[in-house]
Length: 119
Image (cartoon, rainbow, N blue to C red):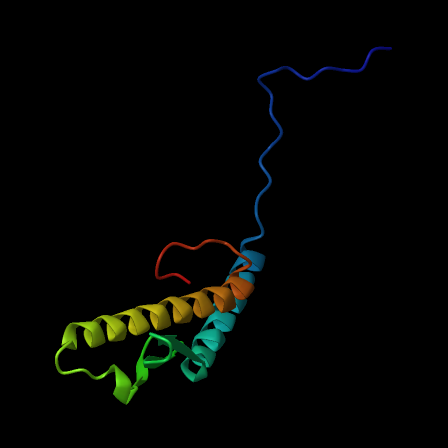
């Protein structure tokens, strides 16, 4: 006897997701993300440019904690160079802090790639 064929227009009923389970998982992830955000407050990154002439320390929350400028970097006749070094050091510290936050949040979200601001 040949196997019974189902009509092409007849489809299996969709599987209903377990909403309670999904909600519980989302709440767990939210709590874990809040914990990681708290940890980022205590994390520090350090960026140094110009062979150590300018150093910036920044928190994981992108707050500049300190800027150190070597006396040799201070040339009254070339203020623009010092300004460039400071900007470069701050930008590098921001990049490092964002990378740190992304790495830590990625461990929580499992790489879900949530849209901006929804780390």
